[in-house]
Image (tube, rainbow, N blue to C red):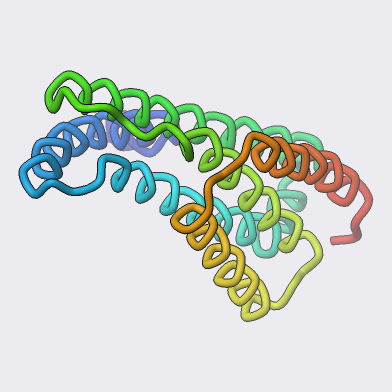
Length: 194
């Protein structure tokens, strides 16, 4: 019984189970969204919106609360940061696979065209917000201030996605900002006193 419990407590197993559950939910939601004639990209906004919120808050909590404990049990800063980046890449990769599956199911079942304008922008913003949450946790920002920053940034992203067309250069700017945050986080992580 303990072997089964420890098997289902692993991060990758939980992620795969959630991924399979999401595949089934996406299939049913495509059929439902087609029945009510809703916009085709509504579910994609929800997937990446939820991932961005949770990624930001989980990254903030990881560095503000769990960093000292992880260092106390003997993990190095580099190990903690590399593990964080691997998990972030894994969750972004799986969410991108969910979007590809959604587009495939949408075209196959509904047989309509799909709006691709924001597909690239949303994962990049999710990456940026997660890395920003990590940095804010490292700098020990007050949780109320971090929540206010999250609300302002997330509201801005929603306004941009819904109201403005995203140019190619906008994607490059946000991607460059995310790349810069990777190096800033690494620098701060290796040098900050905990």
